[in-house]
Amino acid sequence: MAFSLQLLHREDFEGRTLRALAGGGAIGVLAALGQRFGVDVDPGFAVVAAALAGARPMLGYSAALRLALAILPALPYFFDGVSPVPQAFSAAIAAALVAWVGQDGERIGKGSEVVAGALAAGALVPLGMYVQQVMDARFFPQGGLLSALVGFTAVALFWSVGTLASHVTLHVDPVESRGGTLESTLTGEGKDLVGRTLTLYRQCHAVALKMAAGPGRNELVEVLRKMAREAFNLAESHAGLVAQLQSVAQGDVDAQVKDLRARAAAAEDAVARRQLELAASSLGEELNRLDTLSRKRERLLAQLHAQVALLERARVSLVGAAGSEASAKGAQAAQLAKRLASMGEEAPPSSEAEQASSPSATRVSS
Image 1 (cartoon, rainbow, N blue to C red):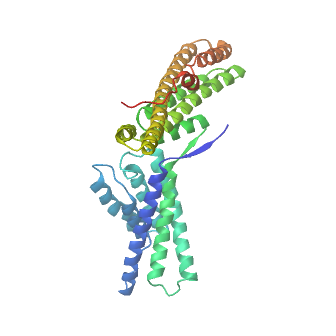
Image 2: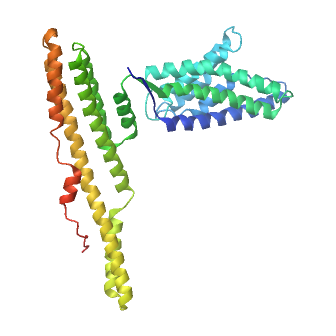
Image 3: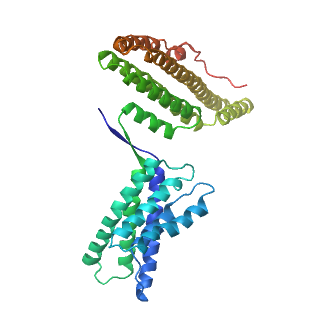
C-alpha cells in the first residue's frame, strides 16, 4: 500500500515563516536592550512574537486571536516547570491558535492540523533553544545585540518550521492525493468539478473495499482510479488553457487587427501598405489560434462534466451492488469492473479530431 505526503498551502507557510523571523528578530532587539538594564527576556517570548507576526487571522477573529496569542502562551510560565518545558507548552499553544484561525485569513483549520502543528512546534522549540545556547557559547560568549538577534530568530524559526506539520496530509491513495492537490490549486468551475470527482471517488472506493477480496475487486478499484485520473487530467488541461487565454486579451488583438487594416487602407506607399497588411494577417492568425483554444477549453470542460457523470453512474451501480449477498460480491466486482470500463470507453470525440475538421482560414476582422 503506497503512502504519500501532500503539502497544502505552501505559500501561506512560507509567508508566515518570513513574518515569524521578523517577529523573532524584533523581540531579539528588545531583549538586547533589556540586557543593558539588567532585564532578562525569556526565549519563549520569541514564540509569542513569531506567532503574532506570522498569524493571518480570519475575518472577525483578528482582535480575539491576537489577544489570545498575547495571553494564553504565557500561562505555562505560571506553573513550576524546568526549562524548556514551559517554552514547549507555550509554543504548542501558539501553534494551535495559529493553525485554528490564523492560517491564511480564509479558512478554519481542521482538528488534525491543529494537533499536528501544536505537537511539532512544541517539540522543535526546545531544540531551537538548544541551538541558541550552542551559538551563544561558540560565537557570542559576550552576549550583545547580535547574540540576542540571532538566538531569538533561531527560536522563532524552529517554531515556524514546527507549524509545517499543520500543512502536511498523509494519503494512502495516490489518486486521492493528486485530487486534493488539484482542488487546492484550481479555481472556478474546474475546482468544483475536481472536488465532486474526489468525493465520488472516495465514496466508490469505500464501497468497493467492502466487497470480497480478490482479482475482481482489485480490477474494480483500478477502473475507479483510472476514471478519477482521467477527470484530473482533463481538469489540469482545462486549467492550462484557461491560464493561456487569460494571459492574452483577445479584444485587444482584434482591435490591433482593425487598426492595422485601417492604416494599410490609408497608406499611399505600396511597400508600407504591404507590410501593414502582412502584420494584420499575422495577428489574424493569432486570433484564429485564440479561437481554437477557446473551443478546446469548452470541449475539455464538457468532457470533464461527462467524466464526472460517469463517476456518478459508477457510484449508483456500486451502491446497488452493495446490497447483494456477500458471497456474490466477488463475481459482481468483476462484472462491475467490466461495465465501468465499457462506460469509460464511451468518450466524446477527441479535441484533435474536431480541430482537424475545423476551418483553418485566417480570420478576417470586419
